[in-house]
Length: 71
Image (cartoon, rainbow, N blue to C red; front, side, top):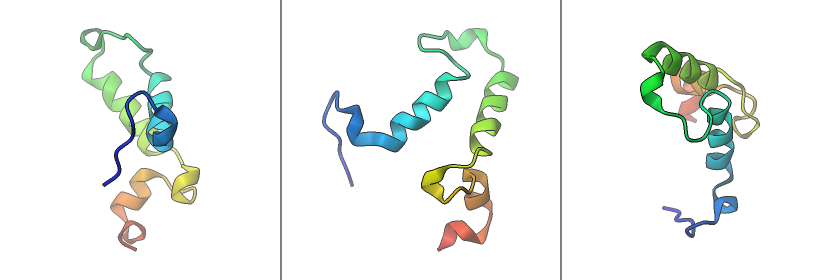
C-alpha cells in the first residue's frame, strides 16, 4: 500500500491526471445537484473509453472487460 503525504499531489501523478480529466466535465466547485444522471454517465463513459499512456494506450474499459487486464 502506498500513502502520499498530505498536500503532496505530485506523489499521486495518475490520480491527479484523472482529476484533471474529470474537471473537463465538472469544474472545481461544481454543485452536483445541478447535473443529471445522464451527465455523470456521459462523463464516466467518455473517461473510461479514453486511451491512457499509463495503460499502454488501452482504455480502462478495454483492460477491465478483456483478458488484457488479467496479465
